[in-house]
Image 1 (cartoon, rainbow, N blue to C red):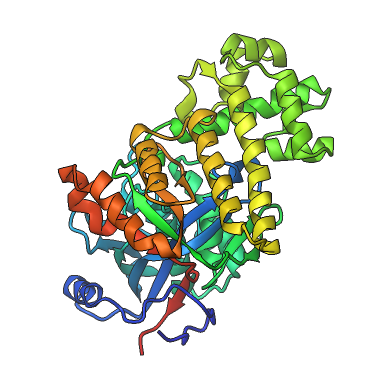
Image 2: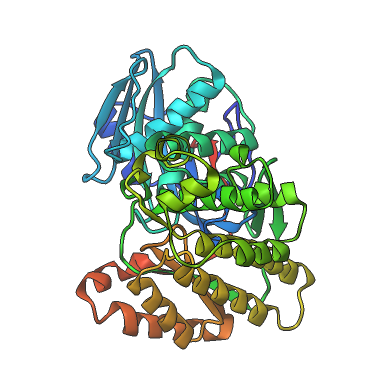
Length: 459
């Protein structure tokens, strides 16, 4: 690919070696012209650090080869025309002056429009260039590999380029992280950050406030294998994800109240730790001391914080968690502080590279999955079964990756065991089930750290 675009000179991108012919032909067939430029944004696999980015803690993902790819032309039509190479995703056209996003109906085009609107608002553009876009993708939908966030990032990049307004990678990542909330997902920014900041050959420690990315060299001698459990979960279409965000928010306020702090402005468990200036281990001790394992009722929360039910609903709960009556604060806080510690331990092992690094990292991954399953309750029977099969097949560590409740596992497998591992997982998880067997080719694959999002022009 070329870096002819005046706005981008980004090396090590996720650009495919050759633009898929089906994308070019689909664009020409739909719009009767050739595209002006292409944009790509990769998916990601999170190696460790689940559900803690929105609590303010560092995570450790890497970009994968699978990506979202868009072909684009710019016009004076004052409309944005969206089409997809996958027929089940219907065409959509909207006026540049009439962009609205229906969070009750999270269709693919609304994710794209999140990116458009986010860039428009960040740049304070009174109007936008008209665009014709054809979108293609190789990230399995609702798989925990960040297909929706990659689509938002790709759309943000397209909007920036079409309107000739250069932005840095960090600004793009921060803007796209915020704008996914238009569709109702209260995420923390990991997916968008790794999509823009990724580099080939290295995982990244992503830290927030301010956003920064540090190379993490993964140990030689092991590979990472992604396996899809073939259960789909759309974050925006259910309340599971936002319920965990809310439980962490309430836990933050209850812990702050117990320590005599002004809890009203504190929203994240990470911010509470900074305020108290104590270690993660001490935060875990505080959780044990203050919170009880039994679920909290609305009444108990309101009584402890000295607020009304109306204030709880209006100021703390999100739009799609207004129905919630029970909150597992102890379990969620324990997971977050424990997982934040595991991320730092994972990076420390990678940096020091001891002789038993692979075994140590595998153990951290296994403990992460147990915490996601038992404390955060974001696994599902199929994920747990797949993790067990992966460990029996020779993985030293295996865990769910992404939001959970379906989607993928990531397993760390010694190189010499890879062939037998893949064969065993096929035979024990995919072959016995007709639905899984049909999806197996795109559901089980080795992955390596890939490059980040980019604009490019085909030579």
